[in-house]
Amino acid sequence: LRRVNPSPYLFLLELDDLALIGSSPETLVKCEGRRAGVNPIAGTTERGEGDAERLLASEKDRAEHTMLVDLGRNDLSRVCVPGTVAVEKFLEVERYSHVTHLVSQVAGDLRDGVSPFDLLRACFPAGTVSGAPKVRAMQLISELEGTRRGPYAGAVGYVLPEEGTLDTCIAIRTILLRDGVAYLQAGAGIVADSDPAAEHEECLRKLAAVEAAIDLAEADQR
Image (cartoon, rainbow, N blue to C red; front, top):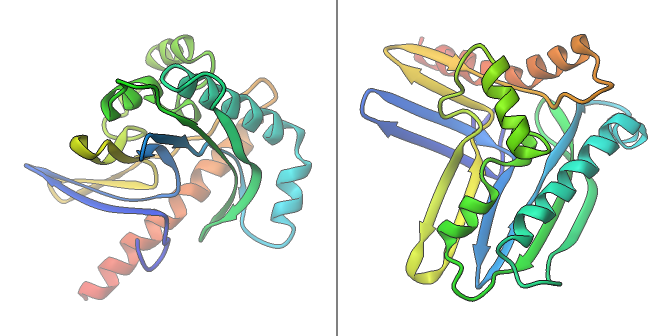
């Protein structure tokens, strides 16, 4: 994955009978020195010529992204000093090996007495993998998704409680290895004007980097 799809977060967790491997582009939530932040990623297209223009011109992608940035502001506002939560980056384009995303960054100053675990609790799960309003979206996901997500869309990271430091990513672009079988998962944000075929293609593009990493690893072993 490091060779095929370098990302801000690269991890390998070996846990009893399974391993979780990932190259996630998205921070779930982080804090350092009482400054907390999230970076919602919403809006995806195939990487290539015209990708940035295509994303920024898409009313659907811009509306979805704006909604999830607002949700991130609301999550942080639950644990931050009033008036300190602000959007520091908005609708910026980031390119990865197979896809191009719209990305924003929201940050605020934590209130006194708020721990890194309180911050994680306020922001988990990320709105970009649940939806808005978050509680109702989670209920619908539970009712409609035929397979439980397991680690997918959860949090991977580290916490230093005494220093008040936390850095977690969303467990996307991941491989779950168990008993010699690799399980891959991907998702897309569904809104009122989503096209099912286009959303399915987006999922396949997101999986392509992980599949390429598996192919490369198998070739190296031959």
